[in-house]
Amino acid sequence: MSKNFVATILLLIGTAFWGITFVYVKEGISIINLYTFLSIRFIIGAALLALIFIHRMKNFDVEIIKYGIFLGMVLAFSYIAQTVGLQYTSASKAAFITGLSVVFVPLFLSILKKKPPTVNNILAVFVATSGLAVLTLNSGFSINTGDLWVFLCAILFAIYIILVGRYTRIFESIKFTVIQLVTVAVFTGIIAVSMGEYVMPRGYVVWHAILFCAVFATAFMYAIQNQFQKFISEVKAAIIFSFEPLFAAMAAYYYLNEQITFRIVIGGLLIFTGMIISEVRVNFWIFRKAGVKKTPS
Image 1 (cartoon, rainbow, N blue to C red):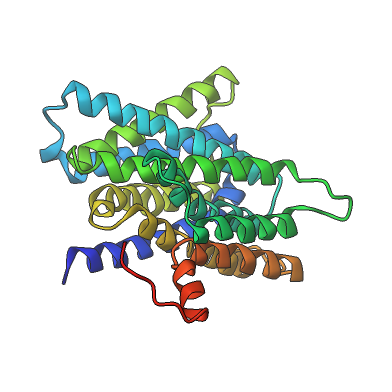
Image 2: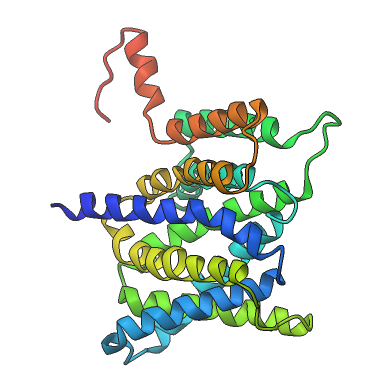
């Protein structure tokens, strides 16, 4: 099997875990402080990876530590924004908004490469933003605070995807991942301590949520992403991650009894359409529809 195929399958499995965690995170942060939840989750995830790959945990040079902390901070702010948002919006809606990162990835790449966005990228943003409006605007045309926090998460995660694609081609993936996870754990832990709310959680529900997120959606998924994303394009990785809302909506319906409303369906479909358009060559469709043969550039 090609590395591209293996990367696609493993990232899709990890995306399913991400989708399911929306349910667990929403339950967990209803019991304990969100920063405590994140800190313990990432401590366990980092420790698990370090123990499994203990033979790789040596010779950390300055460069891998510096860039690992940098990516860890981007990831930390992404999770903080998403987790804060989950306190004010539904799990299924948060997952759909987070999926907008798939639209931002090609747009940010076009800026970095100093090339104007393509026709399909512009159309993707318009369609996806329309879906976001359907999801988040209520009858009074106001936007839920949680929706804005999750929207910020989508932007930050798009940046993270691009950075992972760039730096995992340079650094050893497992060490690089552990540094990132430790950074998130320490940063969120400091916030929790400063708030006077860093206490060990109690009860099956919260520990079930923490352990599922730590093992499957943190240790497994970030090790996979940092190891295998380099074998596919950043845009393809973002398209794979766009399946997260589908898994989240199914999990929210099954575990939380959240209703799949007409607005969520329409808004979600528009955002998902925007995700697909961001990868499809719409300009080719236009030439073919007009009966014009496109010449190679």
